[in-house]
Length: 350
Ligand SMILES: Nc1ncnc2c1ncn2[C@@H]1O[C@H](COP(=O)(O)OP(=O)(O)O)[C@@H](O)[C@H]1O
Ligand SMILES: O=C(O)[C@H]1O[C@H](OP(=O)(O)O)[C@H](O)[C@@H](O)[C@@H]1O
Ligand SMILES: [Mg+2]
Image (cartoon, rainbow, N blue to C red; front, side):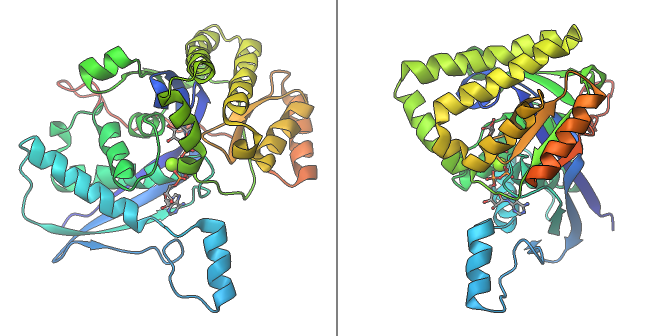
């Protein structure tokens, strides 16, 4: 019997994040440097297989258990897979989509640095959703622009505070400009997503440290201040959203100095809104190290990993690599992952 396996790649929020969570705009892309894989095989029962490392519950000692909880938290990917099964099933029931009565086993693997703002959580869910769409042969019944909502609903189900940006990038793949304006969200139930040519992107670098942070915790206070109508948060989020629109123009114009300016502004606004305690000293240090050689730098997501641009070219890249090496941060050239979606006659984005 047929089995399915799907990848979903880590994503970089290049500009506009986190305004995606506040009716804003984002410019994001998937990267081939890291990915999650989910495998689905038909089976007698529905089985969610724990990952031997990420869902490990067998410890050599109490200190080892405590270290693991301190470094990685209580949860691995099992709850993500369970949640997408539930949300997918409910979506199908609510939309009159009939599912065949057959069961399956889901297993997963990932090399995305954990809780590093590279969207490791939604990568696992996105790959699982792809497997379910194929197993039940319902891909044509669940439109591509709806899929990010389903992935987000699975995380909401778990109480994880997150936005659509990551999920859109991972469902569409490649480089996507996204507009989450309230009028689109209210009218369509989703944002307006415009795939762009990945060749517009200049060489970019990823810098990160082994320093997991919980994106839900990061977002909780700013979200509340935004809901309370705090003027500073509202106007700053609007400015962050505008950076994505300006960034799209800078990319089309190949104006990388302007792109660098916008990236720096994006991080500075985040820092002002969230405050240094929430942004985190290690994260601030990564950005400062990149900026010390004149590179532009901002978070890829809510913290952990940083995307850097060297507008001066190769010489500056060498300086960046040296500065990261000296401070113990990992740096690598970003490989953009192109879109996996194929064009078909009746569905331009499948
Ligand atoms: N690499 C991973 N392996 C297993 N589970 C993960 C991984 N990354 C995230 N998760 C799960 O997703 C939840 C939310 O992660 P999140 O803070 O959003 O990190 P990220 O920035 O990687 O998406 C975690 O509490 C955990 O249950
Ligand atoms: O704060 C951000 O930039 C993003 O935070 C979350 O992503 P994560 O990879 O978990 O840090 C959130 O899901 C995104 O919508 C935000 O843009
Ligand atoms: Mg996440």
